[in-house]
Length: 337
View 1: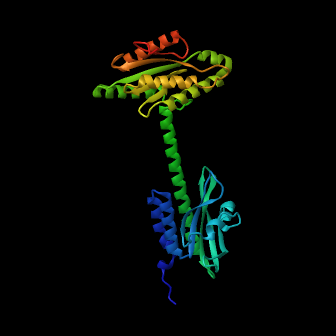
View 2 (view 1 turned 90 degrees about the vertical axis):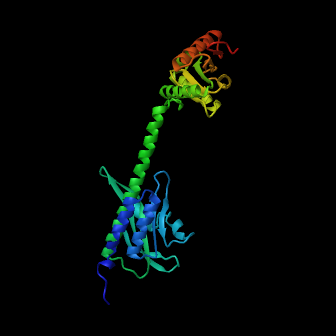
View 3 (view 1 turned 180 degrees about the vertical axis):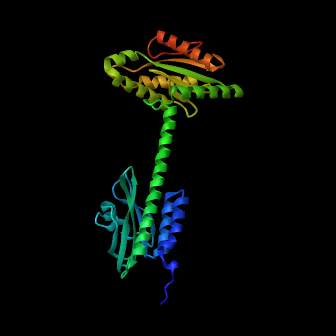
């Protein structure tokens, strides 16, 4: 019987798989396209790609062909003795493995690990497998084609995970640039920018804005008596109350060692500051000391029309609050109590 030339060589289908790996932005789509190219080239009755999750044991199905929903293959692959899992554990290809087809008849399988190397260290990311009804011989050309598909799949997985890591790292750096690392709320730079933006908006709209400055009472004594561990715990608890007490339009941040700030658009700033003050007063003692704060509140435009004037007014209110006693709130112009 005449045999077609290059068209029967499974390796002629690899360009389609390469294109799928190069063009796919979504990992699931890329792996499914790579597997589809392999199925077209090698005509297995069933094929699948399983991935190892670094955060949990076992394998996760990423792409499949000819695997009915509820097939035992999906559960059997989790067994350490299954060839999909064996290929991962042994980091070696398994050919001509006796298997069972979806219909229950005898079959032959080929299973390869998905391997990548970086800095001389080899990592296994999962496995790819194909199953044919028996009898079937996996030729040298078939083995070469499956090996190439495994390499392409590994590259696609590695690229997707590197992109995910880079994205997470970028988000982390972005978050760190705008937040206080100890408390997780906004840092001084971010608060300053938001204050300028909210002042500009209030000026355009003819609305009000409040700036409240909070200072932890006797914080130095807490540090001296309980050490920095106690001091850090106080800072975190105060920050948590601030974050939980404000409205969605408000911004809270840490601007100094034990100083916090609230930027509150509208006329409710003093009310929000009072709610924060009460929430902090309800906190349990740390190191045997009750946590309280003194608060100075300034309002735009009554107490100042720019950031510097508003900060000065809030600072003045804070100074007067400290003089009046623990847990006191005072406006930059008139006392609230």
